[in-house]
Amino acid sequence: MTAADFPEQLKVLDATLRNIETVLDVDKLRRDKADLEEQASAPDLWDDQVRAQEVNSRLAYVSGEISKLERLRSRLDDAGLLLEMAEEASDAGSITEVGDELVTLSKAIEEMEVRTLLSGEYDSREALVAIRAGAGGVDAADFAEMLMRMYLRWAERKGYPTEVYDTSYAEEAGLKSATFAVKVPYAYGTLSVESGTHRLVRISPFDNQGRRQTSFAGIEVMPVVEQTDHIDIPENEIRVDVYRSSGPGGQSVNTTDSAVRLTHIPTGIVASCQNEKSQLQNKAAAMRVLQARLLERKRQEEAAKMADLRQDTTGSWGDQMRSYVLHPYQMVKDLRTEFEVGNPTNVFDGDLDGFIEAGVRWRKQNQMSA
View 1 (cartoon, helix red, strand yellow):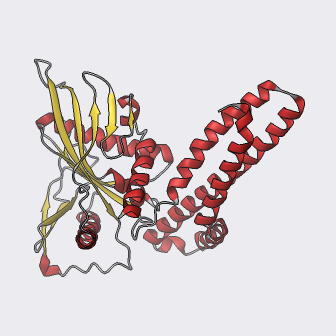
View 2: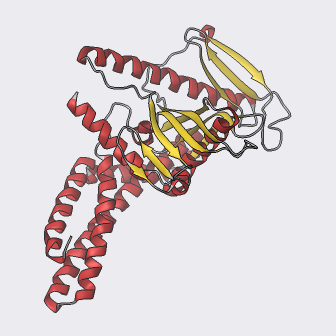
């Protein structure tokens, strides 16, 4: 892009940002913010801690969305003004500065545009993420732990609160499985494109002969159940098991039978939680996970029916969807979107936005084609 293209690029970015502002309904966001601020200032708010956390989480999210849009609008307007002044003064340095800002703005506006593509029934929900080691022995368990850290780092980078519900540690290293929540609106719509089988290729640090090892881990992303959902589970359909927590933990975590495992007898679906100190807290958290799993099962069954009606032949989300190659070369590649990068270290440190954006666009395109 040359300096002659800058005015047209500004027009394109302005039109895109205006569309984003319309779709996200900035005026409604501001009304929501005012309403949430009023709720947050109520003297009896913390009488109900769950509701208080929901109000504050929602307020932080809405405030963040408004701030992002306002900053983008301000930066875009400033870039247009700077370009006019630079052209009048024939200031080559300032024109270059405008070009650099347009590159940065294009990326930031594209990221915001992805939010407008999240229009599914449950996309606005918070997310539950379950990770399970697959084939590959201790390398697979280690890979599962690497993936958990990757997603938690992604959330941390964005300032999204998370809560770990369950971690089942493998004997030698890594994790057998883990479940955690990302507590921000639209977390489900955003992260749901991460569901599927992930593959790691590397020289195994657990192999004395230094051989290359391929290992797998599965990611499942579920929408958090809300009060409006009709997920009623009769008590006689649930088996409750209590046991002693295992693995790293704080005071009393490993010394009492506080961990809880719930089994939904009709479906065999299992949910567990061991990271809270009390059995009651763990049972409540496990119930939330179980309800989310049943809701996701219902969603998948409905989607399968629609796919049958459309005679949809596309692969399922459970198919292998991403490869992380550390040897003999360095690459992370999404097998659905073809998006790839050559720096696995950054990806494992939470740099996932490129993959998520490509996945959301790929899913939207497939939905439109269907």
